[in-house]
Length: 117
Image 1 (cartoon, rainbow, N blue to C red):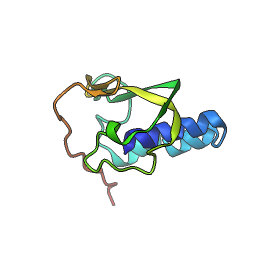
Image 2: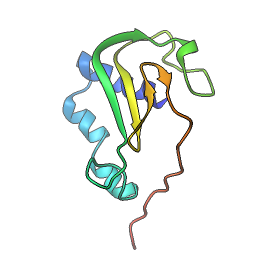
Image 3: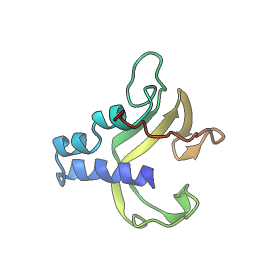
């Protein structure tokens, strides 16, 4: 679902439904600083290299058979979107490329960092 959600945000940006400022506030760089461990949320030496590369010009229709989550249902099925995810990198390793999962599952639980009271 995350892939379709990110693509939908990109499509809404390209169509003028949302502004760049709205998108940056939604995907704020301050969120990782508040809620994630220090190795997440920024591109810098020593951090995990977690990236999503999006081709903002590529259009496609969401098809049920292309969904990679276990539910295989989505409110986006049948919807034409623009802005296709072409690669996902997790901790420096490509795990998704051109519609294909390219690595074994390697996710791990990331617990929110709570502010000291």
